[in-house]
Image (tube, chains in turn orange, green):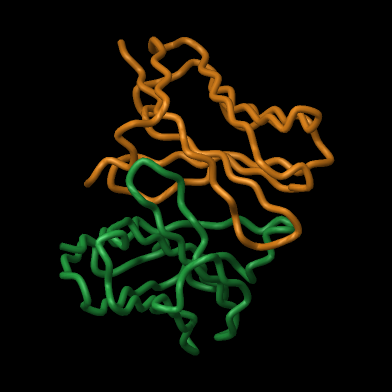
Length: 111
Length: 116
């Protein structure tokens, strides 16, 4: 499949290390945030979400942190694996059912 | 269970032509949304449909239209294609399109449209 992004910011990490992917969102009134993973030739895959009444949420090997003061969202991936290599998007929503996506970050995992 | 399915997977058209893209939501999902993803960017919202009614529309020209059928499948139509319409068109479904109350949006693999 065609690559989803050829000129995206790239984060390169060694297998087994922790990864931190950052995102600045646009609307201070946004109340719902999601991280998606997109592999080449595939659609975005839900990873984890968080609502504005929380500042941290944990999943399996992933943690999302929300800092509403500076409109910042981060995704932490523990013990990064080769299968984590993909483009990661943050998305926001405000009292609506449509998502506004950021530009994405490419995560490359090397052995 | 099958996820969101889209057809065709790839399509090549020339400027001025019309195209129809198809989407079948996850079984039991009644809401379908369409997104356009230009190379190197995040997806952009085009339409949302629920129970055959348009619930939301993004900032796209009238050349873009969509509809939802009684079985909840959906079609996206684009008329008078321009080179700039070349993109990955993603369909997503959710139970009732209520992300604000905890539903999740699931995406298909998309249709890659190339306009020459």
